[in-house]
Image (cartoon, rainbow, N blue to C red; front, side, top):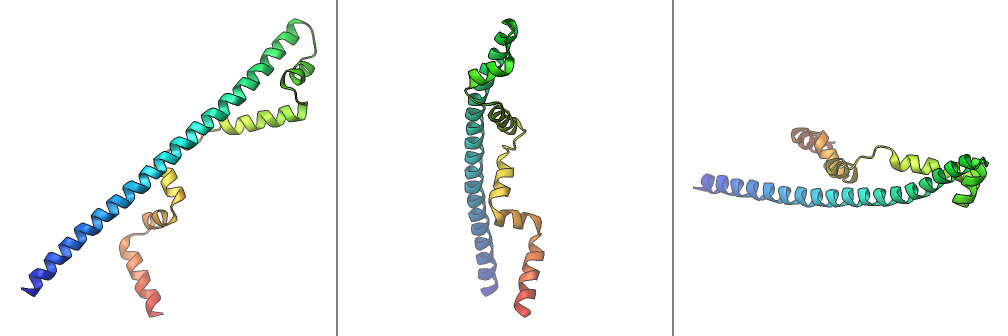
Length: 136
């Protein structure tokens, strides 16, 4: 009778543990998804701002060429910045345009060290290493 009760308790506790783990992973996954979406939206806003400015610079260049003016001066006038600032601006834009990882699972693994650590080591190795540490 005691064995049957222990087995029943073991089953119930295992089910409860799996349910808690499932809820925890769901919560972490939703947070990672939300962060990933927020990051993508911010990147899109930043990119729109940079594209408007670069479109203005390109328009100034086209007009300067049509009017036989200096395109560098036209860009400086249009952008209201010097050449070195313009080069920095373009470099920043390239960084925004670079391929970005917006995969929620990558965000989840990047942000949560415990999930990352547990995803690399099988459970039997974790329990063995804990026993080994206690004995030392």
